Image (cartoon, rainbow, N blue to C red; front, side, top):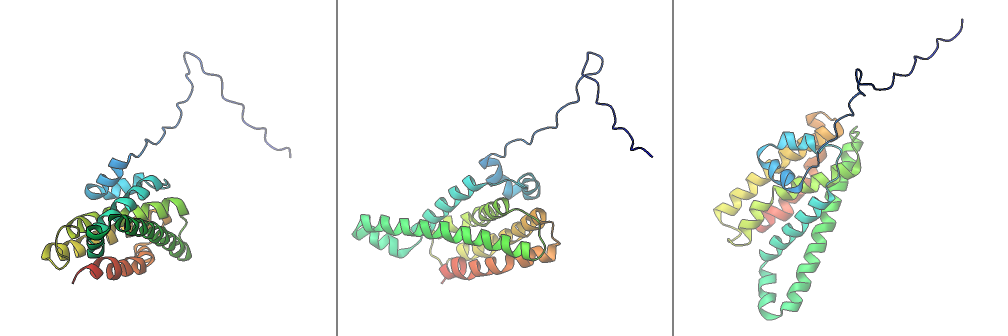
Amino acid sequence: MSAPSPPPPPPPPTLVQPAPPEPARRRRLWWHRLLIGLWYRPVEILDEARDRSVWGAALLLCLVSGALGVLSMDAFRQQWAVNRTHALQLAGLAEAGVLIASLVLGAVTHAIARTLGGSGRFAPTASLFIVVFWVTDLPRLAMASWLPPGSTFVQAATWATWGFGYVLAVLLVRGHHHLPTRKAATAVSVQLLAALALLKLGTVR
């Protein structure tokens, strides 16, 4: 029995039968839509950002967050009053530390998600996790740079932003790695609990 012949090629487009439309291209996800949209329509934005790398936005947020964190440090303010050159060097070291720590957080999140059976790619997961982590922490950092660390507003912002960031991180890992909610929560719990203890509650006296 002979194999069936392949189907004939489609006819060329004519005035009666136009060419089939090309698939719609995904529109560009601008930084302002990503950063602002995570606050008021996070599910839609996370779905739109799926499989996209957002290293530019992640780098911007690391630099801004690092700068706000430096402004909230008493050591920086005291050094600025004594020697501004040394104060700027301290700020540069802090910014480098924020960049390295953020990359480690993103890489660890991706590695845990893959270990739990996830199928997402490294660059979209790590970069977007960094964005989620810092964009939800900006209100606390802004308050801590001007208000005493133990004030009620700073403490309330600490818990509120951490909880919101945790929910967004779970949604991110669940969507990018196609994991159930329980496994997605496991993939981000260690990192966010460590961040809560070291970066957030560590500044609250």
